[in-house]
Length: 205
Image 1 (cartoon, rainbow, N blue to C red):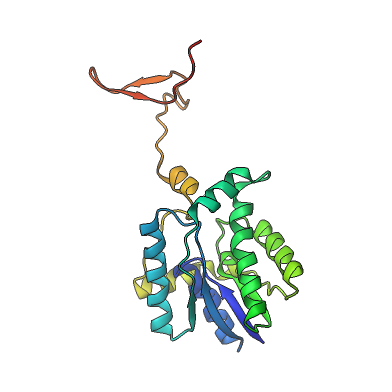
Image 2: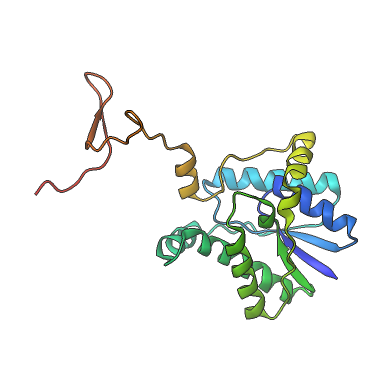
């Protein structure tokens, strides 16, 4: 079997590639992640994955396209959860690329993270497989998550602190000021005598 493995980043590729290699499965790695924000982060993750593949001598296919507007619009319009669009966009691309380039199946390193919506990834991957007529190779790579962390640390790979999209970046770094365990409801938060932070402006009428 010749497998196309979609990779979201270098660290998440560590265990799946090790496992596939041990199993004797031939694979190429595909980088297509236009959801990652900002563009500097997109380039940083790509650079890390390239570094990983060069050290391990894995074949890497790169698509540098960055339709961030399409990604944000799609996530905002997604009727379920925004992650569904994010998964769907990348997995449909991987499935289509696999078909057009003679692969026998496709998979994704997204399956390794305990922080991702595992069942939703599988659902979107299976839908893409059905749409393009190619098998989705499923394996619960989460069992090797810590092994992947250890490999990435040993290799000195850059490890990101949030999923990738602009919303996950906000959720990761936004600081909610709490008073006795509760989020203040005031429109303004006084931080000094001369400075005020505006939480949200609403029509006063």
